[in-house]
Amino acid sequence: MDTAAPPPTGEPLQVADAATGLPVDASSGPCGLRADAARNRARLLDAATRLLGEHGVAHLTMEAVAQAAGVGKGTVFRRFGDRTGLLIALLDHRERQFQTSFLSGPPPVGPGAPALERLHAFGPAVLRHEACHQDLFLALQTDPLRHLSSPPHQLRHTHLTHLLREHGAGGDVELLAHTLLAFLGTSLTHHLTVGCGMTLTRVEDAWHHLVTRLTA
Image (cartoon, rainbow, N blue to C red; front, side, top):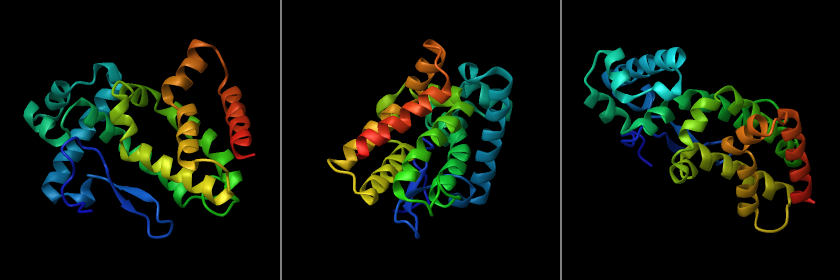
């Protein structure tokens, strides 16, 4: 796939990791853009990050980012497509760091541990990662179909499918991977921990139970 021109929404593209064959994100960041376009994108994201820290995600608008960056609103829309595209771009760097942890980081989340051990470690890693950026993840849940087709979500699904298959789990491993990912959904985790008062540890314990049942 040609990664020279990013999608208009600002969503990362996917390429195959040479070592694992799994898709990884080729971001629409500086490495995939002309130098001037990369600088403009970085300036917009810096402005958006400042606004996010000062006012929270609920008050992050395309107009506010344009004003903070000293550009026209149309520039922001051309770069990111819409507000969801902007939020995805803001989350991209954080998501890339997490992807590195399970694609090439130390075991048991990364390679080097048995597949079942990696499956057990993956859930708590996702829960802790998303808890740190919960506002951004929740804001992106307003468009569930777009979230389910986003490259980061597809990468997680491919990774879990790969681990289930490597472990020798029975049944339709692609659907099992979707089931596991649904359990890790930000909206559900927020409902359980905030709405129901459960601890994150209890949710992590339930993940281990689910993995054990699905891989038995």
